[in-house]
Length: 410
Image (cartoon, rainbow, N blue to C red; front, side, top):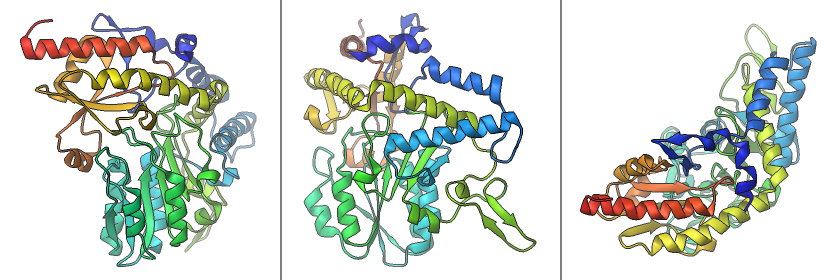
C-alpha cells in the first residue's frame, strides 16, 4: 500500500492522543498536511512574501509568479481549458455562494426550478434557499433509492424546461455515494439548464476532468486535499464566468475606477477582490504536486482497497448499521454508521480515548439525517496515508466500545 511509503511525510501522524498512537480517520472534514506543503508555506513567508500583481519589485514579481503558477497547476489538475476558468476562493462554500448569488440569482424567474438532492451539505443547500427566497424559483428535491443513491429514472421524468439549475454533490460526505455527474449534466443541458457540482469530497480522491464531465461549475476546497485551510477553487465555463457578477468588489479586481462607476478586470481576477490568500494558493499548488506525483488513479485504488476490506467486516458486526450503498464498488472511503444503544457522540468520544479521530453529528446534512431517520451518525473517512492495520484497529475498537457501553467492561 502507498500509505506506508508516505506516512513519514506527515509529522502529525507520529503524535499520540490520550497516550495512544493517533489514528486519523476524519479526512472528510480536513486532511493532514505533508511536510512538503508546510515547507512551501514557510518558503513563501521566509523568502518571497509580498503582495501580488501590482508591484514591480522583485519580491512582488516572485510572489505573483508563484500564485499564478499555482492557478495553472489547478487548471491541469481538473483539466480545465484555461486559467481564466480557475477562480481562487476561501473554499467550497464560497464558490457555491458565488454561483448561487452571482449567476443563478440573475437568470432565474418565478416558477423556475432548482434541483438538489436530500444528501447535500448545507453549503450546497442554504445558498439555494436564499436564491429561491429572492427570485420566486422553486427548490425541488430529487428522490433517493433505499441505499441513498439517486433514483435516476424518476429524476429524468421530473425534469422539464423549467429545470434551470441542478446543484449536486459529486460524492456525499455522509453516504459515500458517487453521483453520475456526467449523465445528470447531459440531461440538464438537454433542457437548457446548468450543472453546479460540489466537488469537496471528490476532487481529493479521484481524477477530475471538468471538460469530460461537462459541468458548468465545479467547487472544491484545498484543506480536504492536503492543502492549507482558507483556500479553495471554483471552476466555471469561461462564457458563464463572463456574465457572472462578482460578489466582492474593491481592490485588486478593478480595472478602472471613475467617480460614479467602475470596470472590472478580465477573468479570472474579476472575482478575486482584495489581497488573496497568496500563501494558501501556493500551498494548494504544492499539495497538487504531491497528489499528482502519487497519481489520482493510485489514490482512488488505495481507498477502494480499504473500503473493500473494511466495509464487509464493519457490516457484519452485530448492532452496527451502515448508511449508503452496501456494495463496496459503489461506496467511497466515507463510511457513516450507528451502533444500537450508543449515541454517535459517545462513540466518537470513546474512539478518541483510544487515539482514533472520527466525526460524529449531522455532518452539516440535517435534511439527510431526517431522511435516514436518525439524529446523527458516526463517520470514518480514509485517505492516502491510512492503512489496513488502522482499519483493523477501528474494527477492534468498535467491539471494545460496544462491550463497554453495553456491559460496562473493557
